[in-house]
Image 1 (spheres, rainbow, N blue to C red):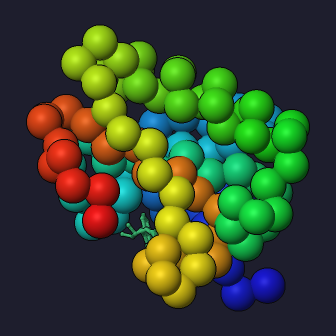
Image 2 (cartoon, rainbow, N blue to C red; image 1 turned 90 degrees about the vertical axis):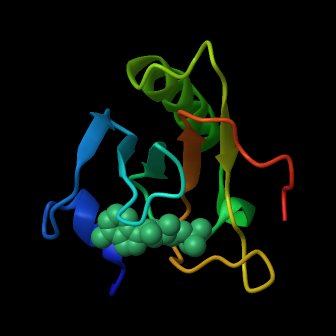
Amino acid sequence: MDCIFCKIIAGEIPSDKVYEDENVLAFRDINPQAPVHVLIVPKKHMRNILECDAQTAAAVTEAVGKVARQEGVSVSGFRVVTNCGRDGAQSVEHLHFHLLGGDKLSESMA
Ligand code: AMP
C-alpha cells in the first residue's frame, strides 16, 4: 500500500518520533502549525475516523495524554484535531490526530 504514514511506521521513511507504543506512533509534523505540533497515528492502517474502532480510540486517547505531558502542554492546554475527507482538508489518508499547542491557538476552528 502506498501510504506515507505506513512507511513511517515501518521505519522506511524517517520521522521525528516523540512517542511509540504497541498501537500508536507519534511524531512531529513536518510543517508545524504551532510550537508543538505532533501527529498521533494508529499503527493499524485506517483511512479516517469513520474507520476507527474502540480499541484504537482508547489507544490514541491514552497517547494524547502521554504526548501532552511529555511536550509540556498538559497544563497550558492544547488542541487535538482530526481532518476527515475532502471538506475536512484531509491530505494523508491514514487516520491521524494533530496535537497542537505551545502557544495560544486561534479561537476560530475553521
Ligand atoms: P492532514 O492534512 O490532516 O491529512 O494532515 C497531514 C499532515 O501530515 C500535514 O500536517 C503534513 O504536514 C504532515 N506530513 C506529511 N508528510 C509528513 C512527514 N513525512 N512527516 C511528518 N509529517 C508529515
